[in-house]
Length: 308
Ligand code: NAP
Image (cartoon, rainbow, N blue to C red; front, top):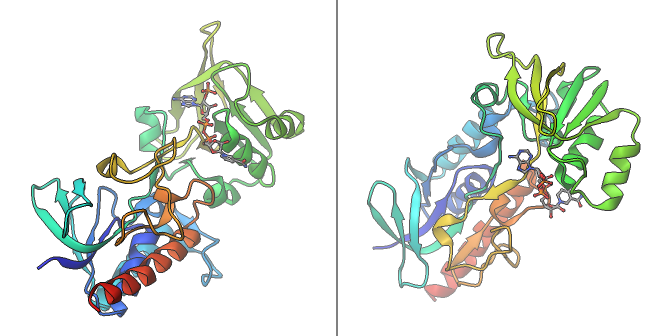
């Protein structure tokens, strides 16, 4: 017997879909993925999730969502979807462990992964001053200098947002011209709190021993000159990659690989998408949870019609 609904991914979108489909007695099967709990497990305190006036730790919020889903009968598998056949009847999902699952409906909530620079020191300090989300973590760095890495609209937006808190915002860019739209670039270049560090790449994040960011080691790509930048945090804004690999060739995607949806519906009946995998604009826990709820309600409707 195929599963009534399989939910792929356990970030805010997937877990909310699990709570709603669980409560609807659909006994959802949830595939946890490589990063159970999603992007919120890589941050510390979340201050903008409604209902927590004192803030909540990201990992705790996700653990609570999971418990809530389990309370309503959601079942969890620690594995990863590596391939899918969404045109088959029933649809099939192949897991990394080799198992093939069948489903009447699917919610894809595999999220998007922030791109990082790939430095060892950077990886060690993620969540401890290295972050990819100014909205999430900017307020923790008041009256201290911080750095944003990148030169696109995300970097510009993050830098401008951070000027509310930080004493100074350095934007470290590998070229001598911003990729960001003209208006955003102009705002960045004219802002008194922002200083551009052109033609530069980060070669190491300092502070691994202290377990917090103490600064950045930079290399000028034109002169090869090395320097140190004293900052308390590094915001990496070099883009995101949506986790849509197992669905390539089967579902419509935009030029960056995000799934294109109409109110969480994909073009294949019974396949829905929620959260960052279909949202390159808002990318917030609360919006992901919102679309997870929408997808679950769509699943209910779809299954009711299927079994009419
Ligand atoms: P993006 O436009 O792809 O820009 C990425 C930036 O990071 C580029 O400046 C790139 O440098 C740099 N970069 C990439 N890999 C790097 C590496 N390994 N080391 C150092 N630097 C690296 O990505 P995005 O800024 O996230 O924007 C994505 C899309 O969302 C864009 O279409 C953007 O317009 C849109 N967006 C819009 C808004 C808005 O309108 N408010 C806000 C955010 C995003 P190079 O320039 O040298 O390639």
